[in-house]
Structures are given as C-alpha cells and as structure tokens.
Length: 283
Picture 1 (tube, rainbow, N blue to C red):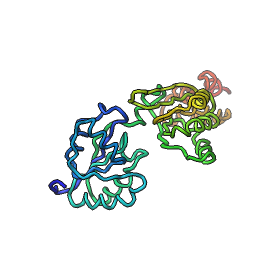
Picture 2 (tube, one colour; picture 1 turned 180 degrees about the horizontal axis):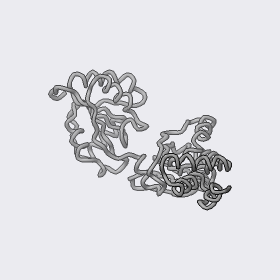
Picture 3 (tube, helix red, strand yellow; picture 1 turned 90 degrees about the horizontal axis):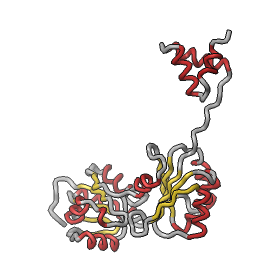
Picture 4 (cartoon, rainbow, N blue to C red; picture 1 turned 30 degrees about the vertical axis):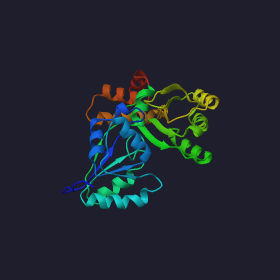
C-alpha cells in the first residue's frame, strides 16, 4: 500500500457506461493513486484501465453483491488505518442499484470522509434522452423478478405523477413492459433506452403497448433502462356550491381581493372564473 494519510478517504468513482472516452480526468487520477481499488468486476476494471492507459498501483479487491457484507468491514479497517479506497462499479455511480451503499454507510459511521469523482449515470442519461418530463422524476431501480410481485409494485406506482426511471434485465423486459402497459395503460408514453453510450445505442420512444409488442417480437439485448411518463394529474373534485362560496370567503379573509380569491378558487378546481363569480354573487 501507499503512504498512510492522517485520515483515510473513500472515493466513489463514476465509471463510463460503455464508452471509455466518458471517463473523467479525476477518475483516471484516483484509479492510478488509490491505495485500494474495490471493483464490482476486477476483469472489467482491468479492461477499463487498459482503455484509459492507467496503471493501477494499489491493491485491487472484488466488491460485489455476493461478498459486500463480508468485504465491507475489511475495507473500513483499511480506511480507518488512513488509506485511500476507491470504489468502482461496472458502469455508473456506485450505490445506485449497484454495490456501494453498505460501504458508504459503514464509512460514514466510522467517521471516514466519503467523496466522489462524479461520472456517468444510466438514470439521468436515459431520462435526458427520453424526451419525457425531467423536472420531477422517481428512480425505482429494478422491478421485482416474479410476475406477481412485479404487478403488485406496478399497481402501487400507477398513480405516481413523476416520470419513472426503471432498470430491467433484457430477458424480463418484454414481460415487464406488458405488465407496465396493463397497470399504467397501453397509451402511457415511455422510452426504452438500450446500450447507452455504446456502439449500438438505441432509444425507442413509444407508448407502453407498442414497446411491449416490439420487445416481444425483437428480444432486445444489452443494458436496458426504461423511462415512463408519470400519471396525469387527477382532476380536482368540484365541491358543492356552499363549499365554493366558503373557499372564496376564506381567501378573502387573508386580505386578498374578491376578484383574486375567485380566480384562485376557479383555478384550483378547474372551473370557469365566470361561473364562480356568478355563484358568489347570487342573492
């Protein structure tokens, strides 16, 4: 290992999704100087280092779903001893549906500084390319693998108004899209993003029903991210006449004019201002 520092440090590395040219200069620097590099797949790390012409001087260890529970305390010991540990996944940011969350939590609990060399993320890349609203979105990670659990989850998400971003394995994507179309409606806008940043990158922007048929017929391969438009906002229920008059009166009591109060109430319940005005001024 390299020379110890006063305090160890955990550095999360945002790895390229597929195109090595997306690697940041800081990622290159950290890979070459960290005392320990914990990698989701050490073979992929070696390939990335070759592509980037980086020599990894530190010790390389594996850190993946199957061993992270055992490996985490070992890495925390290294961190508390004053060494720098870099964490890198096969692509994207560690801890975002990838190993890393457990190590970050343990490092924070041990009082070790945690920082990041930010980089690519399939979540935000797919969202940006989808053409769907991106001002508010919800990341749901991977859907449950079994059909029953998946359908239960989707029924709970059917009224979510934010744009949804999902990961799905290629061999389950056709079934997942069919369940999405059933739960959300076949006409709900969506995008299937495949092999982002790679040679065969593909973004299909279609309603869920069409995407489900396409996936069934074409058996798509590679890394897949789904982006689905949020549910339309539910129309406000019209209160009865007395409740509308009371709503106007409540707003007037705050000090705004009757004209503005009527406008607010009309906008809130999707009514014509003229109708609310007539109702309030009825004798």
